Length: 146
Image (cartoon, rainbow, N blue to C red; front, side):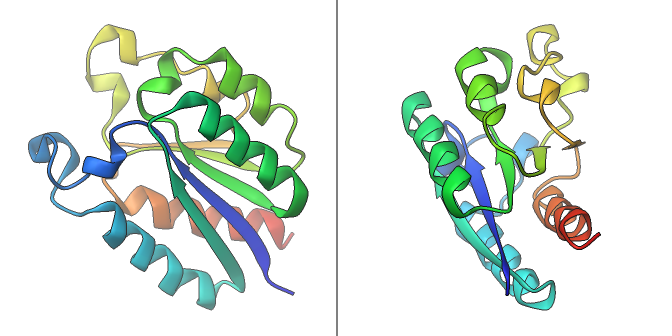
């Protein structure tokens, strides 16, 4: 049976490929989804990818993952630095969580250096561009198959 992996994306990631391509690159969220879907088949995983600009919707997605998800990959975007509520929701999830950031948040503005989500994450990938998603998927599959 394939493991179901939720890939959750926070605010402004719907504009990936259009917003600040000098930082985030030219790939779109649809490109990321296609890459993850292709890899998921090889890893015996199923993905459920979502994006929201609203904190409460992201929390609801985490709650859905509690029901049938084996793991979560999350790019909380700006909510990384502000959302104790997302951290609290992730703390209710029993499976592994991998946090992804397209840019290296530690080379950016000081306020981006702290992530509340990191306190729950089993791994953090930052600064690898959109390849961070497939790296996270590979790692999560490895964790789930141990």
